[in-house]
Length: 136
Image (cartoon, rainbow, N blue to C red; front, top):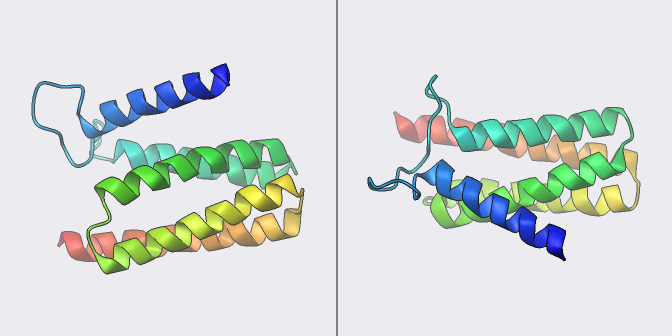
Protein backbone atom coordinates (compact mmCIF):
# COMPACT_ATOMS: atom_id res chain seq x y z
CA UNK A 1 0.00 0.00 0.00
CA UNK A 2 2.82 2.40 0.88
CA UNK A 3 4.53 1.66 -2.45
CA UNK A 4 1.29 2.46 -4.32
CA UNK A 5 0.97 5.77 -2.48
CA UNK A 6 4.54 6.72 -3.32
CA UNK A 7 4.01 5.74 -6.97
CA UNK A 8 0.83 7.79 -7.11
CA UNK A 9 2.58 10.79 -5.56
CA UNK A 10 5.39 10.54 -8.11
CA UNK A 11 2.88 10.28 -10.94
CA UNK A 12 1.02 13.36 -9.72
CA UNK A 13 4.32 15.27 -9.50
CA UNK A 14 5.24 14.18 -13.04
CA UNK A 15 1.81 15.22 -14.26
CA UNK A 16 2.07 18.62 -12.61
CA UNK A 17 5.50 19.18 -14.12
CA UNK A 18 4.42 17.90 -17.53
CA UNK A 19 1.39 20.13 -17.81
CA UNK A 20 3.03 23.15 -16.22
CA UNK A 21 0.76 23.35 -13.17
CA UNK A 22 3.66 23.69 -10.78
CA UNK A 23 4.67 26.98 -12.39
CA UNK A 24 3.37 30.49 -11.79
CA UNK A 25 2.40 30.99 -15.44
CA UNK A 26 -0.78 29.52 -16.96
CA UNK A 27 -0.75 25.78 -17.68
CA UNK A 28 0.50 24.65 -21.06
CA UNK A 29 -1.41 21.88 -22.88
CA UNK A 30 1.84 19.93 -23.17
CA UNK A 31 5.29 20.56 -21.80
CA UNK A 32 8.04 20.41 -24.42
CA UNK A 33 11.69 19.50 -24.01
CA UNK A 34 14.55 21.58 -25.44
CA UNK A 35 14.06 19.95 -28.85
CA UNK A 36 10.36 20.80 -28.94
CA UNK A 37 9.20 17.24 -28.26
CA UNK A 38 6.34 16.44 -25.91
CA UNK A 39 7.65 15.31 -22.53
CA UNK A 40 4.55 13.16 -22.04
CA UNK A 41 4.95 11.43 -25.39
CA UNK A 42 8.64 10.77 -24.75
CA UNK A 43 7.77 9.08 -21.44
CA UNK A 44 5.03 7.02 -23.10
CA UNK A 45 7.49 5.95 -25.79
CA UNK A 46 9.98 4.93 -23.09
CA UNK A 47 7.42 2.73 -21.33
CA UNK A 48 6.28 1.27 -24.65
CA UNK A 49 9.86 0.38 -25.54
CA UNK A 50 10.22 -1.26 -22.13
CA UNK A 51 7.17 -3.39 -22.92
CA UNK A 52 8.76 -4.49 -26.19
CA UNK A 53 11.94 -5.42 -24.33
CA UNK A 54 9.82 -7.39 -21.87
CA UNK A 55 8.12 -9.23 -24.72
CA UNK A 56 11.45 -10.04 -26.37
CA UNK A 57 12.81 -11.40 -23.08
CA UNK A 58 9.57 -13.02 -21.87
CA UNK A 59 9.78 -10.79 -18.81
CA UNK A 60 6.12 -10.64 -17.83
CA UNK A 61 6.82 -8.51 -14.77
CA UNK A 62 8.43 -5.84 -16.99
CA UNK A 63 5.50 -5.99 -19.43
CA UNK A 64 2.98 -5.71 -16.61
CA UNK A 65 4.76 -2.89 -14.77
CA UNK A 66 5.18 -0.70 -17.84
CA UNK A 67 1.66 -1.37 -19.15
CA UNK A 68 0.23 -0.34 -15.76
CA UNK A 69 2.16 2.94 -15.96
CA UNK A 70 0.90 3.53 -19.51
CA UNK A 71 -2.62 2.94 -18.28
CA UNK A 72 -2.26 5.87 -15.90
CA UNK A 73 -1.04 8.12 -18.70
CA UNK A 74 -4.08 7.13 -20.78
CA UNK A 75 -6.40 8.14 -17.95
CA UNK A 76 -4.67 11.52 -17.71
CA UNK A 77 -4.93 12.05 -21.46
CA UNK A 78 -8.64 11.32 -21.37
CA UNK A 79 -9.03 14.30 -19.04
CA UNK A 80 -6.73 16.73 -20.83
CA UNK A 81 -6.55 15.93 -24.53
CA UNK A 82 -9.64 14.02 -25.65
CA UNK A 83 -11.13 16.94 -27.55
CA UNK A 84 -12.33 15.19 -30.74
CA UNK A 85 -14.31 12.03 -31.42
CA UNK A 86 -11.43 10.55 -33.45
CA UNK A 87 -8.95 11.19 -30.63
CA UNK A 88 -11.32 9.67 -28.07
CA UNK A 89 -11.77 6.62 -30.31
CA UNK A 90 -8.01 6.05 -30.60
CA UNK A 91 -7.61 6.56 -26.86
CA UNK A 92 -10.30 3.94 -26.25
CA UNK A 93 -8.50 1.48 -28.56
CA UNK A 94 -5.21 2.26 -26.79
CA UNK A 95 -6.73 1.65 -23.36
CA UNK A 96 -8.37 -1.61 -24.45
CA UNK A 97 -5.10 -2.93 -25.95
CA UNK A 98 -3.18 -1.83 -22.87
CA UNK A 99 -5.69 -3.49 -20.54
CA UNK A 100 -5.25 -6.67 -22.58
CA UNK A 101 -1.47 -6.35 -22.23
CA UNK A 102 -1.87 -6.17 -18.47
CA UNK A 103 -4.26 -9.13 -18.37
CA UNK A 104 -2.20 -11.29 -20.71
CA UNK A 105 1.04 -10.51 -18.88
CA UNK A 106 -0.61 -11.74 -15.70
CA UNK A 107 -1.54 -14.94 -17.55
CA UNK A 108 2.02 -15.16 -18.92
CA UNK A 109 0.58 -15.42 -22.43
CA UNK A 110 3.41 -14.24 -24.69
CA UNK A 111 1.59 -14.63 -28.00
CA UNK A 112 -1.52 -12.80 -26.77
CA UNK A 113 0.54 -10.06 -25.13
CA UNK A 114 2.50 -9.62 -28.37
CA UNK A 115 -0.74 -9.19 -30.32
CA UNK A 116 -2.04 -6.69 -27.76
CA UNK A 117 1.24 -4.78 -28.07
CA UNK A 118 0.80 -4.62 -31.85
CA UNK A 119 -2.73 -3.27 -31.37
CA UNK A 120 -1.40 -0.74 -28.87
CA UNK A 121 1.29 0.54 -31.22
CA UNK A 122 -1.16 0.73 -34.14
CA UNK A 123 -3.41 2.93 -32.01
CA UNK A 124 -0.38 5.17 -31.32
CA UNK A 125 0.39 5.49 -35.04
CA UNK A 126 -3.24 6.25 -35.90
CA UNK A 127 -3.58 8.77 -33.08
CA UNK A 128 -0.39 10.61 -34.01
CA UNK A 129 -1.55 10.74 -37.61
CA UNK A 130 -4.83 12.28 -36.46
CA UNK A 131 -3.07 14.82 -34.23
CA UNK A 132 -0.70 15.85 -37.04
CA UNK A 133 -3.62 16.39 -39.43
CA UNK A 134 -5.42 18.60 -36.91
CA UNK A 135 -2.30 20.56 -35.95
CA UNK A 136 -1.95 21.98 -39.45
